[in-house]
Length: 114
Length: 111
Image 1: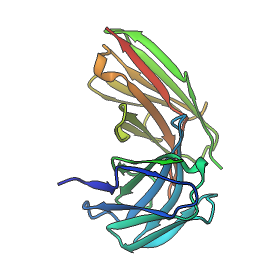
Image 2 (image 1 turned 60 degrees about the vertical axis):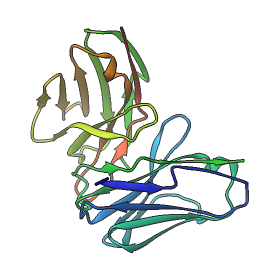
Image 3 (image 1 turned 90 degrees about the horizontal axis):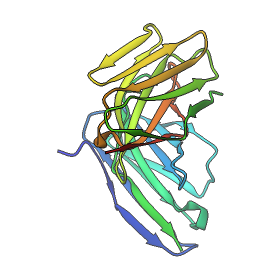
Image 4 (image 1 turned 135 degrees about the vertical axis):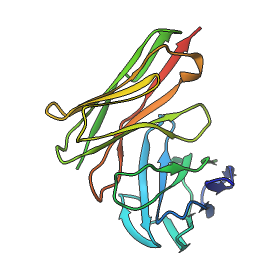
């Protein structure tokens, strides 16, 4: 009965590799997000999808590509991983993209690039 | 765009004392202000929020106050307990826009 789930929980990989993180929500929400939390704990929005359509794409390198096969899933694919990509990546969802609603976060994926 | 500042960055209090965390925002059009708590190794979770049509909201030991004129809002935790130790994030948003989070405050409640 987990509301927002992510896999994997931990990801250790070499520079230059390509990896994917998966996110699923069972709350029936229309909007999903990807956040990056760096070592200083800053929470920065990367992408926002509403009903499978991209609505926010902050200044993120195009090595990062989100994919939403349906409104319950938002995956993140990262090409040519770099050391600076090491961080915790959180998926989140909210009822809509109105911007005034609770966001429910997943447990996070801890990515370490060696 | 919106910019949210948060102070202090770290805060230590004795168990039972009160803790106050302050945030300022730059865009006067922002009208929704949530607070999230993130325990060590866990996900951020909403603890309280306030909309711009009210000045204060309370939920048991936590309260949030909003001063729209000065563009700042504060989180107040009374009778702090060790389980209140966490990183607290404020955020600001407006209709149709995503949250802009503050940089976080690490609160330590000392027994």
